[in-house]
Length: 441
Image (cartoon, rainbow, N blue to C red; front, side, top):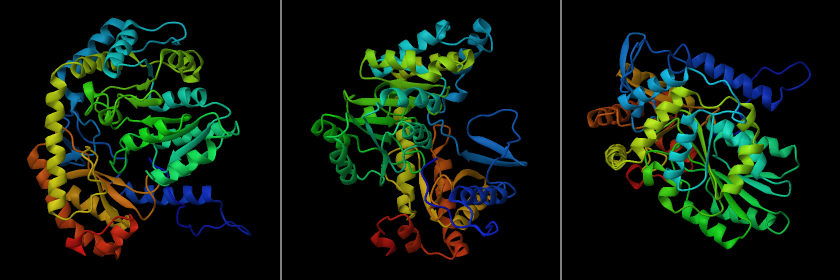
């Protein structure tokens, strides 16, 4: 989830005082959740006893699943299943020892394979979030300054709250605004040891890319400027050996700290931390709190991840990349042909259709479900209240016919969705600060 704007006021003021922003936010989220669950939009449990990656059944209705982030579709690959099963047979369902004392052979094997993928020192954490918790407080010094992109993942923002207790300045800039970023660098470069920019490789809501080359230019220009990039949604489906969207745009910069994970295209679980050198890797390994005080990645996930890593290190990964890219291009071209307001035209599998007001998004999702498609609603608190949209990821489970059908359905439903919300297409573009195409002006 992303940073959000202040929620609309909820008329539940306490006697003699207004509720705090925090209380207002909780009230707003509660009202939204209470509405969405009965509508069948969120917090649903499919009827399926078996998943094939493409279809789900909810309350007896069959739907093509456009909510998965397993972009390469490897979670149903028999090699990953057998890897998990073999790991359970060899090491059990759970390995209950701190990594400070013991780790399984699979752990060491997987880290070595990840180092082949990234060609840099790597640490494997239990999850990306727990990796951030080990990483960020250790690599950011007391005399450093931190700049957050407005849309950097919530897990990064949450970890940066810990820095404020050490009186480390943490500021935010508008999303991917390089001018604002450079202004902040100039503000802190002479008074602080390091200036950090925390950003995503692929932004999880809108699917746009970090402008890596522009950030690298700033790192080359300012000696004490560093990049910390969360590339969970970029790993696997792009880059050499699936090393991700940041590395696909440029080689590993010596001031880049990369955090990513196995939970999307890799079809396993665990966080991956990539370092410029072994010294920094070892510092986090020995002093990062979750590296010692949290359970390690467990045998079934390690076995699946090793099997996935073998695929990523083989020529097969290039075939998978090309197949997915073909589907991404199909989705983007059809969305453009139907004049749908897609937030970003970046060639990523994450597609965000801008809806504007929440009512438009709710109607769109329900109508798509009625037509046999399940998509993700993106609403407050994941995005600002009046920047609701639907997120439609593309995976290798989808056929070209699936993609064509869902785009056609969205285009047919879209005008009615806007009408119900009392808005028009110009309102949508204005809400998202996007340029209105000439064809719809």
